Image (cartoon, rainbow, N blue to C red; front, top):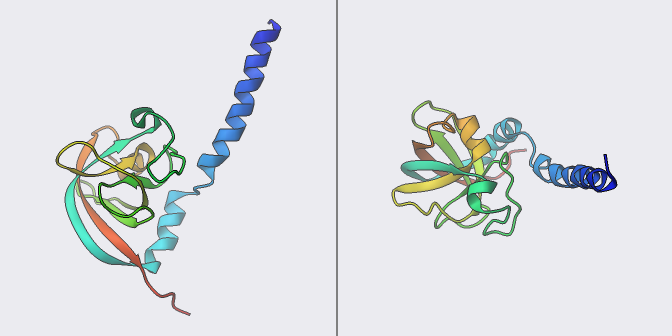
Length: 146
């Protein structure tokens, strides 16, 4: 093995160590969904079609909000909702749901109301299918009970 190949291997290993914590910082979607559910009330509801996107289809890791895109994170793209808005996305085909945060703009295809990350699509059970009918509940924070 020559020196250049060793250098490339070390550089890739270091890059992996630096990038992975950014994705891991989002935490487990299931524990996050369970813990967040009692703190929110439904503000409005939309029905339509959802699709998924990823770093590859997004053309990189930059989002419209400036946050780093991580394929596994519970985030989504919406055309008009303010950045940082929490929404509960429910797959109408199987009843699975997850709370996600809007941090990007889209979808850019007519007839779709929300794009979720590929990891969220996997957890909602529609990664293979690609597009599904969903219910999107816009959430607002409620006062914490003591």
